[in-house]
Length: 260
Image 1 (cartoon, rainbow, N blue to C red):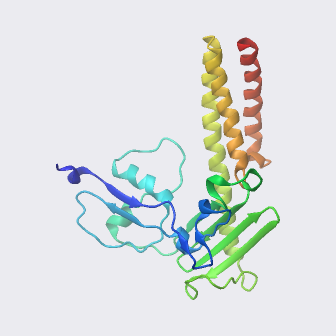
Image 2 (cartoon, helix red, strand yellow):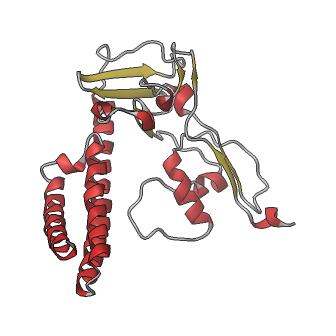
Image 3 (tube, rainbow, N blue to C red):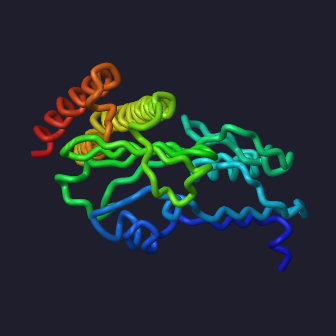
């Protein structure tokens, strides 16, 4: 049919699977336990681009969040909102693998089936080409692990406390701070659009529609409060969000008084 000449084909996965390499079977959603060993976080990524006959593996470490910018780049579309990740087209076409690349990992312990009291428990990690640093946040405290992947590909020996891990910890902390800033930016953009829409509904006396917009803002707050860490709990980043929530609650009271 000729579709292959103008169709991008991308094959990937959302996660790998642990098959007793570390005494566990599955991934985060299959039980109330999770790991970020390589057998779980390494996934396939195959991209077929029309007009590109070269088929050579790219060795550089890349991330799932690079997929969307790559596809946008292929169709020459510029995102109109903040994003993470970078287009892989320069890497694909130049065939050059840069050194020092990093991948960041985050998961809950039980995926979609997490009970409410465990929703804030998280595993965060950063992986380079030669090492991996892991931070596990649980209700009973925070635990760390460091693996020398150059010497220990199976991730069997935790070196945390035996070597200096200040730099990996700093890198992971900086990434988490970036995540908080991005989450705040996206949340404020969405919430302010909802509130503006609600005010239009108020002028048009469409009170139920306006109430629905505001309820979406409050639902967004519930979602972000689940995250660990959450920008809503940050003393600086959370300040603007508190103002938006106060506006939302005041508007909701107005709409309810008209609707009731």
